[in-house]
Image (cartoon, rainbow, N blue to C red):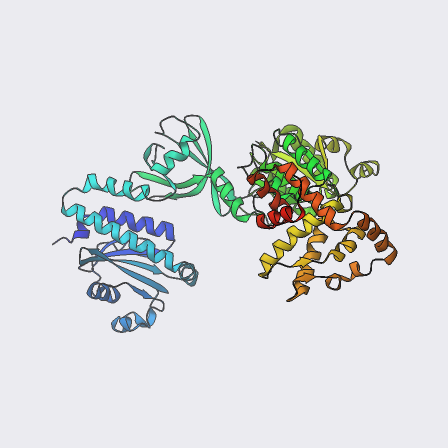
Length: 586
C-alpha cells in the first residue's frame, strides 16, 4: 500500500533537492514504512529502497514524534543496534518528523559526511533547525492536499502563500526566462523602476558583492534594474522552474547599511554650537549653498568641525535622505586608496575578492561624499579624482566599463593647498574644481565669545554621559579659557571639559585646580591682561549679552526660547530664571 508521501513523491523530491542545494548537504526523506521516498547526493541512486533494517534513528523519530540531532553518529545510544555503528560514514545527522495532524507520516534526514559540512551546520544550527521545521510543515501540508485530491491546484497556492510572507522579493522563472511567480514585495521593488507588466526577465550576475550579497542586473522589457540577493538553481527534471531569485532593492539596502554602519547620527545646523557673528554667518552660508550641487572645499585647522559642517550641508540639502559617506584620505594606505574609492572587479589583482568590490563613490551614489584631508591624496589619485569630477563617472580597477554617478563632493583640508600648488604637490586644476564654493571654519581663538556657550554645552553632555549631577564652572576658570589659544580648537575644549568633569568627583563647582596642567601654567602676565578685559566686560555682562542675542536671533516666543536654551546649552527653566534674575530687556 502506497504511503501518503509515496503518492506525492515528485513534490517530496523537489523539497529534498531544494534543501540540499541551499544547505549544501545530503538529504533523504523516508515515509512511515521507512522507504526512501527522496534523496540527494549519496542517496540519489537509492530512492525507493527499504531502510527498515538500518533506519534506527528514523524509527525512533517515528515512535517518539521528536526531532533527533546526532552529533556523533555511531556512538549515540540509538545507533547501538545498527550494524554500521563501528564504521559509520556520517559525521552529523538531523532527523525531523513530518507530521500530519497528530501522526508522523515520514522523516526528513539531514546528513553530513565530512567535518567541513558539520562545522557549517553547527555554526548555523538554530536557523537551520527552524528551516527544516518549515519544510516539514510544507511537506505535511502538501500531503494533506493530496489526500483531499487537490494536488495540482493547491501546490501553487502553497508556494504563493509561502513566498508572499517573506520580506524579500522572490522571482521564479523557467528555462525560457518567463516569470512563473513574483511575490508582492518583489513587484513593489520593480514598480519603482518600471510600470510595465513583468512577464519575462533576464537575470545576470554582475560579479559584485555588496555586504556579502550578490549584485544582479534584471532586464525587464529593455529596462535594466540593479538588485542584490541570491540565486538558486532548481533541478529541471522535477520542476519547470529553473531559477529562484530572492532579492532586495539595492538603494534601500545601501541606505539601511549606512544608517547602521555610519557612526555619526544625522547632524543639522542645530549641532553647530555658537552665537558669535562668525558662526551665525557660517550657518547662513550653509543654508544658502545646501540647495545646489556645487563642489565645496572646507578649510580650517584641526578640531574646528569640518566634518560637522559637511554633514550639516548634507542634511540641509535635497540629498538628506540619501547616503553620506565620509572618507579620511590620510587614514587609508596609499595602496588601497583607489580600490576603496572606486572598487574593483573580479580578478583585478592578486588577493582581490573573487567577486569584486564596490567602491565608496558608488556607495554614495545619489548622496554626498566627504573627502577629508584631501591635501594628503597622492598626485596620481588627484588625477583620477579630477576625472571623476569632470565626467561624473568612475571606472573600477580592472574594468573598462564606466559607471555613471550622481554624487555631491565636499572636500576638506587643514593644509594650505595654494602653497602646495606652488610646491607641485597638489594639482592646480583639481584645486579649482573642488574650490567652487569655499568655506573657512573659524578657529576657536577667533570666536572666543562662544566659549561660554560651548562650555555649557559640553558640561551638560558629559554630565549626562557620565551619569553625574550637573556641575558649575567657577568664573575664574573662564579667565584661563580666554587666555588660552586653543590650538586643538573645539575638539581640545571638549576634551578639556571631559577631563575636568572626571576630576570633579563630588564637587558641584569646577575650579582652576581641576584644569589640565597646560591651562594652569598660563603665564600670569597674559592671565592678568585677560582679567583686565574681563573686569571691563565681566562674565555676568557677557552672559547677559549672549542670552539677549540668542533670544533676539531665535525670537521672543516660547518656541524661540526653547531653541535658544538648547543652543546655550542650558535648560529652559534655567533660561527663564536668568531672564527674570537679570531683568533682561528682550
